[in-house]
Image (cartoon, rainbow, N blue to C red):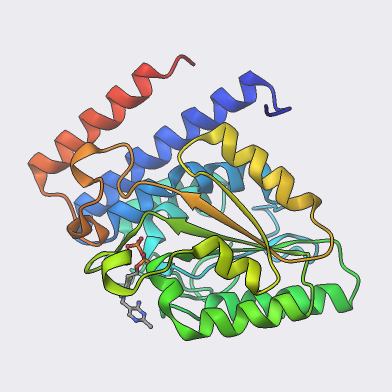
Length: 283
Ligand SMILES: Cc1ncc(C[n+]2csc(CCOP(=O)(O)OP(=O)(O)O)c2C)c(N)n1
């Protein structure tokens, strides 16, 4: 059971609803973008930005901030929504997603937007960058933590396992990575394309502390990050079981929604399902 007050949890749930609504609106309006992973990760990004991460949108480059490497950069819509609602740039700017000369391009760019620690989009590279950030923080005896988000399909990249070996070897206990385990990648089911299971055992074999949780349950997410922060001898990998497009039923398990924008009817249906889901939660 989480030590966090029910009132705070309910507040996070309300934020996650707004972030989901923004994701659907901006991808629908851009007619392009990654809606499925963004919706599935909305609860985790809410917990990170509004409870877990030590950060300050008034001072995005604050030296003691926690770092966050979003290695699966295609889920930019939820990343941008979380950043805007945290105060890094105006919420009204979200509507410029993927427009010409916008700061909100299809993949996040550190040179364009405040709050982005590293540009990403080319899968497989972020975990290595996060390892470098964690190693230098360890050597400099800094207290901040390094978080890193990766996709499960992304975990088929060889560079992920090179970074995994490095982090285990250097006992980077200040590194907390998590996998968006929705079992879907661009072409279908991860287990049919290039099997990842037994995924937890793989990370354990690389000398990581491995946790798993429901990545669409705010309270479980909070508890799991708290546990991860207590680890002091190994890097932590959290396998967050999520659903593509959560809570939208017609996106669940359907790889088309990895990167297709909803048309007008689908966007309407998506909003209805999101509102129905939240109305059932007693806040
Ligand atoms: C090096 C590299 N290869 C291919 C791509 C194209 N690509 C973008 S997302 C994606 C699938 C990733 O699957 P997963 O990590 O499971 O993300 P999800 O579908 O769950 O959002 C691919 C192949 C890329 N961005 N980078």
